[in-house]
Length: 170
Image: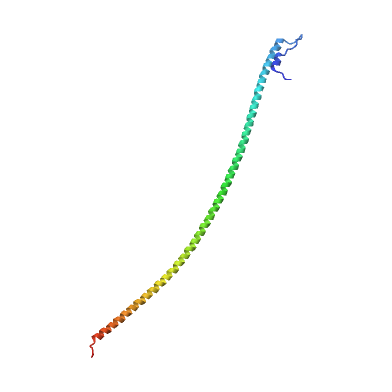
């Protein structure tokens, strides 16, 4: 059975012959009732406070759980981003290696092409030298022939002069 402060204040004791002083009992009951009322109010306040704190604790736990989930999600996203960056770096590196190989192949092909061109130019130079040499030899021969002709012409002119200078015999 639950006793309220009002129950204590309104409670009447039966009188007995050698019983207690009624007024003293009434004062004491009022004091007990007041104390009980204060304790009930305090208990009510503490119950409300406990309820409020439990609610707040529940809210904080919810927030904590949300923060944990958010942090785990952020860690997962960060790890995913890191993995993606690593994959991108590998792709870029692979592409760069392929491009480097293509450049090297083009450079090697260009070297081969230039070496062939150099060989072709050397052959052309040899041919030009041979042609020039043949042309020079031909011109030297023509010059020699021209000198021989000049010498023959000079000789014939000399003969003609000698013949012209000799008295004519008749």
